[in-house]
Length: 302
Image 1: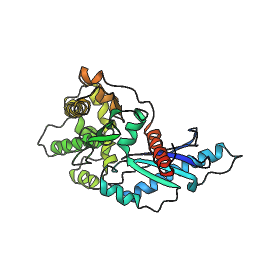
Image 2: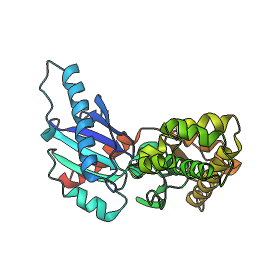
Image 3: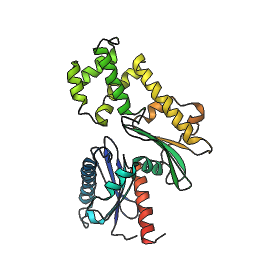
């Protein structure tokens, strides 16, 4: 592989886009973080976030290595692990992007995370953050569970929890359920207890807006608030079922990834807990692994 090329791994989710820049030897040169990059929900916003995160990573590298030749976008091989790329139509449309990079290889954020977690080896992974999904990488193929997108999928995710909290709050404000701590906290977070205002706010919400409400819910989970605990227990039952589905018929390890992974891991059955392993590398590194493999194959190198 030419030493003039640089490799960028993207982890683009419903809330943030992270970029990691490496040289051809795998040395970390720079990193950048920007906004949402879900290509199913808003591909143009995803492109903007990707370019911003890459620009920040490249600027960081150029500043650190000021005496060396500046890195340009045309020298960068990009592996982009993106939310929504599991949907064939969204991926196909995104791959038609006239990007400024040397080359662009697209996979789902879930697949990038799984490759990174197991350093390219066989294993299962569940992402549980703004969204939720699971996959198994085995015999050079991915086998996915969930990941159908919010609101029809992504059960147990931050967006799912936030939406449930808003629905509960509206029931309380309509006096169809007793007013409680969760409803009051949601009203405080949204800065209104007026039903019409809440509905108007939510009409503009994306997944990350709903997921942001989880920050207010977690303290109530730890103090055993009945309503909040019931929501998390419902989500945990779903994640347990997903894990059992991924782990059946083999003895491969499971990695949990995402902002809610530590929360839900505590609910797992002993049989699932026994299979849990720490991630060996980041989703960004998994995306670089994918891009390097694809680039090598294209050039006929080993």
